Image 1: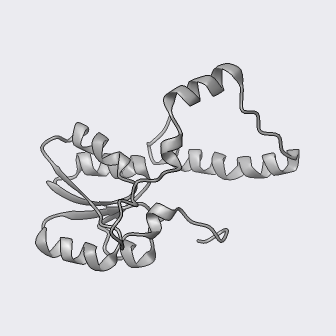
Image 2: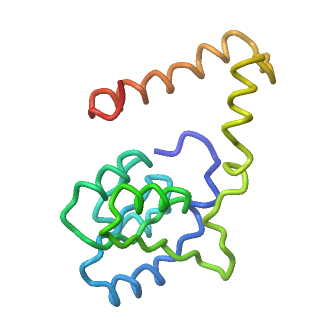
Length: 151
């Protein structure tokens, strides 16, 4: 479902050909992918889910190798939670390390702390937009709770 003409740059750059070659050289590896990936990549996925769902799947599944098609920041947590398993980042369709999102890297614990402490930066918007924007967030939280992924 495409609700707006936008996308995450990280999830658009994975190469289906390179994933297919990786799958050939790692036949027992399961491909796990974030749903924002291109359809051509999702066709190779053994499991599609949110970042939290990918982590839980990788930890709980019996496979020992995973090709991971999402932002590489999750690989550290996967390796920490399942040190006996191998996590292979899905390769991009170019020669850069573009599966590291520069925008996500701007968010830090210090910035979150300061935001929570001082309530800044403040975002002002029309109340009708705020109410409309709240609906998909509430829906995502309800889906996560129903799936046993959130409190």
